Image (cartoon, rainbow over all chains, first blue to last red; front, top):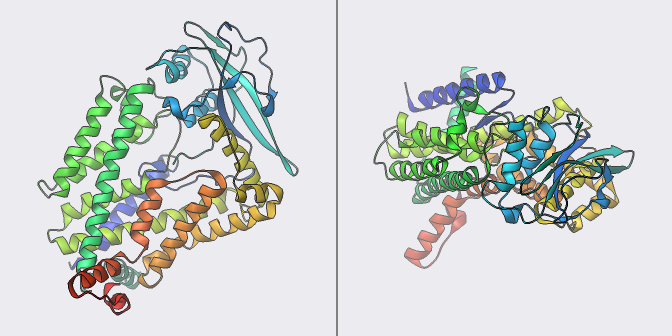
Length: 166
Length: 303
């Protein structure tokens, strides 16, 4: 077998393994992928923002959705705290049942290696096309304080978060 | 079929073509880039896992068969990054042939631990494929010149395949209307939320303002992106390779300017693969040795 034949056989072998793995694992088996990011255009999306609330806040007064420009509290930028926004978005969009383990998991993103100065309100943000514009609304999901956790009483499962990390 | 395989094999690997110093240095640089970036990813993820992650929300890859949460504590993910660095060095200096295969396996473990919370990140896939190429080339070839040719051919094949697959996914999932500019309005709004979430503020750039004011600009951008991805498989042919790879690079800059997403590792690797570095390196050698360089004269030999 010459070098060309050997090389093309190796490529062919990897290709077969690649195809089998992505076909049996919903298109993803790192580093093999069918690369479906941004393939479903026009669908509503779900992301997350975190807001810093007043220090004495222990309960959420209203769980109603608000327009994105009317977010309560102050911005809590995640990147300077070493938290990936996609991870927060995935929690709020993919968790269908908020088991105690899931609640602890989301809470640990903010508290595993640092203390909270003020309560944090985690909000689920949904965007959808409305004729020629995009409507964006945010719904409170969870209030995380130093010692307590206040969870939305009836949060329906959401669409899958879509952004692709780089 | 056999004929296609033969043609493709010659286009990708070119074992018969003369190898210049520029080629050798170029592949060394690609290899060094892959090893360093794999280690960097693993260190970055290792600290993130130790600092932030406590549970598996969505198991990916091998995590569907083993409980990957053992990497979440006791600094095991950081230790894994140290092992990747160690074995990467052993592979780079050809101390132990299976070293790159072990790097690839540990890299996979680290990815599945880092992305166990549901995000499916593609930012490291090309580096992962590169590590697989290095692992296979060291295991299956004994001569360094053959390893170099195989590594590059493998990369061009699977990178071209991956980007074309992305275009096919878009056409299958959405159809021919995928590049409609209103879709980009929706994604820019999504990215606005993400950037606000990350940094606390979002200022649209000039291109984003143009698209938000008139979505037809968005249609033009998306058509370009879809075409660039669709024709990516043409990088399998030597005559188109540099143009196609740089077309994909420009698509990545389009993603950066429209959606604030930068696939750094992929873009840097593509720049490393898509510019005629062997010609540039040869010209630099010639200039250093004789005081003058004639890059155009080297073009045919170098490519």
